[in-house]
Image 1 (cartoon, rainbow, N blue to C red):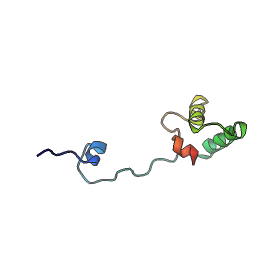
Image 2: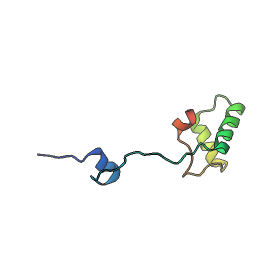
Image 3: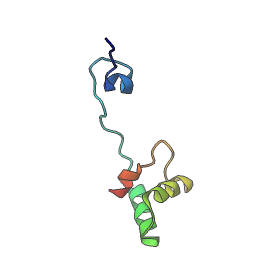
Image 4: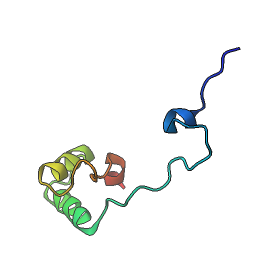
Length: 74
């Protein structure tokens, strides 16, 4: 018989009970939201991935706290 590991094992490396997912620190701080709003005013057709790249290139966010594309779209 062949057993496969649970998705939890692949995600956490453990079979122990615990929280999967949980909450992430909020990245949509007022300065980030303001910057996104300004980018959209300048260029309403700008894609979320372009906004994400610009937040990084202008130093508004770091790789550790830049919002996801889906967060930007929200």
